[in-house]
Image (cartoon, rainbow, N blue to C red):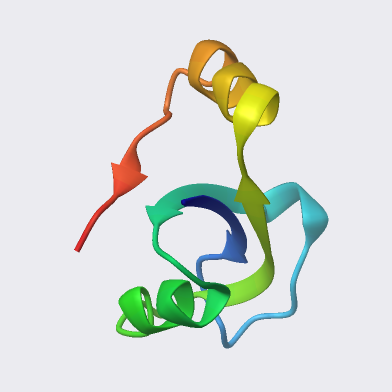
Length: 70
């Protein structure tokens, strides 16, 4: 399953919506996603599963669509 992770790059700063970035992570559960990116200094805002038509939309309309696999 693919998850879309919304995050801020610096966990030490106050979150600002305009600075929110996204990455895509392949995992079975949200917990596994968190384990895969725990080494990053991210302030995770939200983790959303992406499937079906939503996944196809993300692939077609996001030029930076790359899935993190570890």
